[in-house]
Structure formats: C-alpha cells, structure tokens
Image 1 (tube, rainbow, N blue to C red):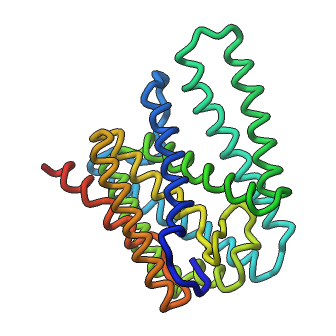
Image 2: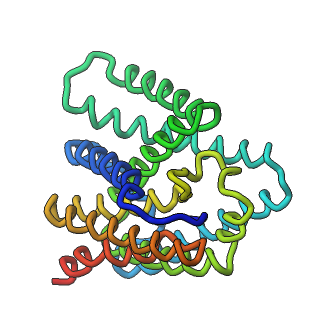
Image 3: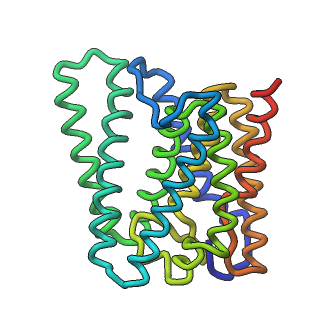
Length: 272
C-alpha cells in the first residue's frame, strides 16, 4: 500500500467485494466432486513448516525479480512475464470454476464448452488488465484476487495454510520497509499491470487480496459460514487498522494486521 490519504469506511468496499467474490467461488468448489491436486510440496503435519518456507521463498524470489526488472525499467519484459503468468492463472481458474458449475448439470459436450468459455474468459481478462480503463481493470484484479485466494485455500491443508499466512505476514512487514516490495512501491505499482489496484488514493497489491481470500475461504471449508463471517470481519478490521497506519506512514504492509485478526478463529478452532 502506498499514498497519503484519510481513511474512510468506503475504502473497505473493494476488499469486501474481492472477499465476497472469493467466497462465491468457494461455494462453487464445495459442490465440486473432482479432486484438485495440492500445491504444497511437503505432507501436512511434519511438512507444514516446510510448505510455509517454500511459499515465502517463492514470493520473495518473485518480488526480487520484479524489483530488478522495475529498476532496469524493462517494461516490455515485465509485461511479458506478468502477462503470461496472469493469463495462465486466469485460464486455470476458469477451467476449475466452470467445471464446478457444470458438474451440477448434465450438459452435452461439457468439456468442450468449459474449454471454450475458459478461453473467452481468459481473453476478456487479458484485455481488461492490459487494455481497459481503470474501472474495468480494478474490477478484474479484485475478482482475480478473490478467485486465486479461494483456489489456494481449497488446495492447501489447514495447518500449512496457517503457517504460510503467518510467515507471509512477517515477510511482508520486512519486505515493505527493507526489501523489494517497498522499493517496487516507491517506483510505482502502476507499472505492474494486473499485480495491483488503486481506489481513492490507495494502492494495494494483488497478493494482499489473494491471501485475504485464501484465509476466509479456508475457514469456510473447515468450519462453515458463521466462523467464516467472523474471519472476514477480522480481515476487514485489520485492513482498516492498516489504512489508519497508512495515514501516518505513507506506506504500510497490507498483510500483518488483517492476517493476524482473520486467523484468530481458525487458530482457536483448529487447536480446540
């Protein structure tokens, strides 16, 4: 996050919209019978800490590479890399969620229809991210963050998810002030099309939205809508606190407060 502003409740609207879209995706996955392979390299339990370190290293290396590209002002290569990554992510998510939708209906040639619609969604998202004006662009990023976070919440086991979110919150606090994330923010997040959104003088990264949604969807999958609501409120309160700090500091990490407050019901219920 960066920029100086006065926080108001309206600043929480895009965060809430992204979370709600993610929860809509989560309800689709709850009706989906097909197995989705996990994205963690180590088994749950003894390997949960390893999974957390794995994700932190991935995020850290990715942020460092982006910073080096931004520093060299290689906009073409930045757009090529982010364009490929975002296009692949949108296509994968489209296939998964459309498969969840059509799994509830007897549709002739469902596979062909899913593939065709996924291509259309991917092409539309590409133009929305790299060609459209700010309103459509921001809406697309919000939806992408919610959908991607829900996929991660669904495919990462609970203990690993808690460690990953906790470690990423710690890394975020370091990276904003001493690492590549803060340096990228100073250079201008608007250079990274698809990896950030802006709303009323505040900018946030796609990663923030993704991990908020990952948290609330994981709570939904494990403990149902009531505790998911509690976690969502915790995330929103945490975002508001982060925005209050942003008033004073001009730049503040987006993960520590929301993740800490949103994790409370998950930690309590998991260890009871």
